[in-house]
Length: 291
Image (cartoon, rainbow, N blue to C red; front, side):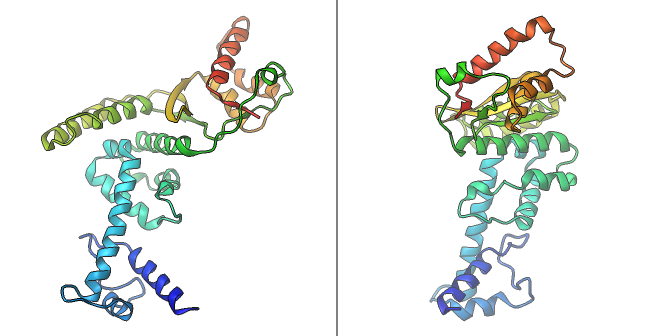
């Protein structure tokens, strides 16, 4: 191993080591060795800071940047569990599932599974919090996932029961137990208001968030999270629409997907044709069908 590579790896390990509860660099590493001695081995002190203090600056700034990015990505989760629980949740999650990518965009990629394994971190709003985390991660994926070329008019007309329709890679489907789409839209609108720089206004908003979260009642919804003209939207779906799109995403031919979609449906047989015409027309306009 080259000397440069060795220094790079040691620097990365030191910078990425979790902070203490006081948000300082720990004096000892996880292997028991002193961080002060490690810092002195490859960082020079100056007339104002020791080697440890210089290294601590990078360690703290690395984690503060992760915290800021995570909070920006999950404002709805913050509103549901509150500041104290959110901070504890965030630190525990990022310690167990540290960044593995060059981009901070992927910080929350394991959050849904992690929350499912740690329900105590979101109690007493465990289901609501999990629904919100799923929506917020779907929003991230819908925003920057790939977009494939659309089917042209002739290709749309040629669709039959044996067709295996492809949908846009950015489309995300969610079956949720709470109407978190409305809640998240309200929260984002409030946080983007012109008085956001006022501390009093910020406190008032947090109190309003608490009241709004407490008032959210369970409601089964089906949601498509999609992108249109570089903006992310949440589209409510009927149960049959959700099941149909879900089947198509799983690669089923259209005929099989339709059978699955209408299993147990309350839509009368005579109304299903017009229902499908309306649904397919909307999805085609939104650009969901691809080559």
